Length: 628
Image 1 (cartoon, helix red, strand yellow):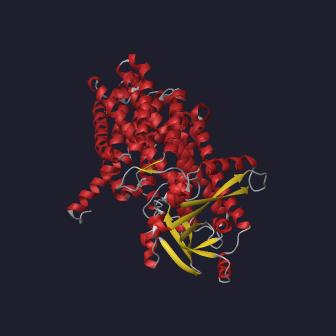
Image 2 (spheres, helix red, strand yellow):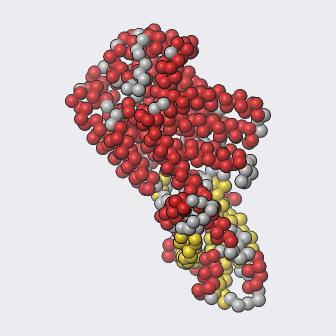
Image 3 (cartoon, helix red, strand yellow):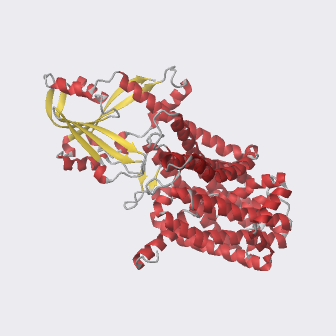
């Protein structure tokens, strides 16, 4: 950046500031509960001694350095899918050079989908534990506030989900400055306590972490289940890379986020050494009494921002899953005219809200929720490692032993964290696993069901080329206008066309066979959006191409056909769409309960009309029944 213009530097710094508000909200609010869970948990608390505190601080430091800095900031962020990150983008990248139907493709697909499913579990737990841990600061001010903690947390959470419909474009500009203030406060509070107890600086030496694990093998292993809480949100660095770019995210991490987090964690350690009773809430007790109310307010605002990023991520990953064919079409509302990524999915929003409320009421405290948090985070991190290995080995062309050595240290570390958290499955870790398994079942059922439906529709299909040739012999009356038939099998006659011909006994002068293709890249350039081929007899083949993050808009895509000599007047164009009614049957391809599930999802999916922005007054739907 040293040779860039002042305007470029200003834009770069603005991106780094914006990244603070979106990328680092989750990991930035971990100090609220991480060390409290290590030393004050009801699940295997670590006794507060000098050696133990130094050992835990050393583990925290080197976990952040190895997992977040080494793995995500320096390694995983290299695996970008044309600038985009996230587990769906990584899965698409890993699948790129795998053959259709191969065992490798199946395993990569399953891993990616389960990682995405665990992300939804994280999306439920993050708002619950973050907001609850912030509001619990009221108990530090006075125990009289304790009965109000859960009701107030629920009010904040309900407000957060209700405002999703309005979008975050207007308030999103405040996220960066608020998080800048938050990280500055973290550093100041930590530094004040380190000055009072500078002995904690010794934890910079990895000897203390290794010594703690060697001297206390059982307790050290179990403590990893709480230490991993300092890493929650690390996946967001990679997932949000497409919004800000790699360099601004890296700058924000090294210049502010990492130093502020470490200073605060070391400050909490210093406080525990000087006052072990502070284990009740070591974060809030860092502050002087006069600052508690403002700190609770700032903490609550920071956790709302962290939760907002996770909710937006859930919307984004759902849209990607829909585009890639792993989820049914859901209603998508665009909350910004200028920002293409600002979307709102009502079904996902209310599902998350109901789940979050159930979590808060069911678990009742951030400490109990911490058991549910770690398993989702470590599971996703472990899957990211395996997908990164696939990319390095088969896309980048690394030698097998190079790829193994590159990924193995991260796999072993994440496996240790995952194993430590698996001990807490009965105490709450079951929730994200069950939640993730349910989402995984929905995703795989939809993908398999769509594949079977495609095959069913193709069994009695008529080939398009002979059908067009037969029209030269006459028999079908041609009427003025343009008819558009959408199909997933461009080589066959669309079923809607056959039904239309059967019922109306006519064909339009211009017949457009339109196929939508979604590629494993985030965006398809507009110049490549459409491909057009003349088939004769007034028939045209149009292929519309999107990336998995593109916003589908069929009329806009058809307007691009003007370059090929095809002009569309929407008032003279009719869209003929097939609407299949599924009847569950006992087949060998898919179990009966999954057929029923697929049929229910298919029935409740939003229409093609809304999803592809087709003018509803120009649509004709023709129904048929399919036995699955």
